[in-house]
Figure 1 (tube, rainbow, N blue to C red):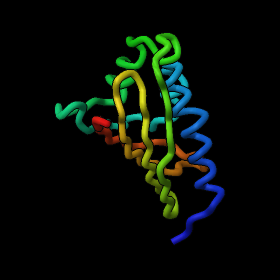
Figure 2 (cartoon, rainbow, N blue to C red):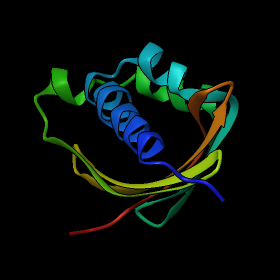
Figure 3 (spheres, rainbow, N blue to C red):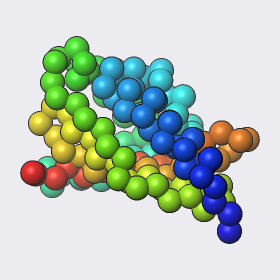
Length: 126
């Protein structure tokens, strides 16, 4: 089992410069580049089941007013990152609009590049 600080730092960079930025700005192209094709998203929002394909998720992002354009609060925070060989799991907290999301993001290093292969999420009342 091999993990490196360099891999953890690469994922931090992806989360801060791609994921959080893409969510804040509503930049579908930025987000799309982060995901592996075929990625699925699961979870619950306010107790209601949530299941989407990558295409459905990106369509939702494209058709909403971004937090940046709406002037709404946005804060992305990395809670933890675990790397084992070519897989990784990141736990993040994203506050946007009236939501307080906790995301578990699974990454896989393919052809030397970390891509997201799965996302689970939930909204927690503060």
